[in-house]
Image (cartoon, rainbow, N blue to C red; front, side):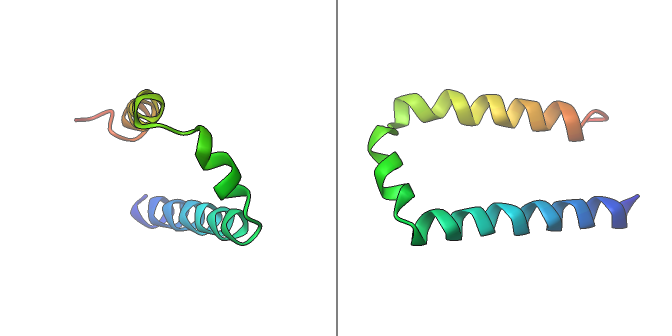
Length: 60
């Protein structure tokens, strides 16, 4: 179970970092970042964190 979990995390990191590289080199991140503010992003990050908590930390 541990190795499968670590492989899934590694794959997710590779995909996420590849997306960041593509967004950075294509200048799309600069265009989209004008619309982000801390007030708007905090609820998004919290909901994402709660979803991951429910998915991965059920025994805690």
